[in-house]
Image (cartoon, rainbow, N blue to C red; front, side, top):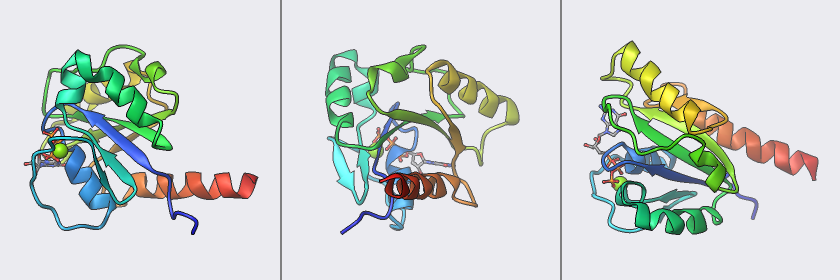
Length: 151
Ligand SMILES: Nc1nc2c(ncn2[C@@H]2O[C@H](COP(=O)(O)OP(=O)(O)OP(=O)(O)O)[C@@H](O)[C@H]2O)c(=O)[nH]1
Ligand SMILES: [Mg+2]
């Protein structure tokens, strides 16, 4: 069966909102659960924040990214610190998009700072979460349709 959208792997610091994004995309009810290992949730790959924060796991992230169509760097707008290095997107042989989370509780300035960090890391496009219009979902759907049409 043809999958309905592209698969996406989320990468970001501890508590930035990766699991919440996976649950939203899967249409699941929100349930807090600390991510302990790489987990597949519907068409998303959820990773523990430790994998980005602890450089010795970076390779594992790159290898796991091969399983997904798209990689998403997730940045929590309410946090000043970032673990994304400039041009980090180049490590992943995938399209890398950015998602700014907690935009419901962040200031405009904080949102702009998070976007700047993601841009410097080399993402091709940025989405905000929570997003009432669900733009990220639409993007993943459209990419899949375009790919099918090109076949
Ligand atoms: N206000 C607000 N809170 C959010 C948002 N996204 C996530 N959170 C909260 O942030 C906390 C951490 O969210 P998770 O989705 O578990 O974070 P994670 O990135 O999966 O964290 P690890 O599994 O530890 O790497 C939870 O209490 C969420 O409710 C958001 O968009 N807005
Ligand atoms: Mg998690």
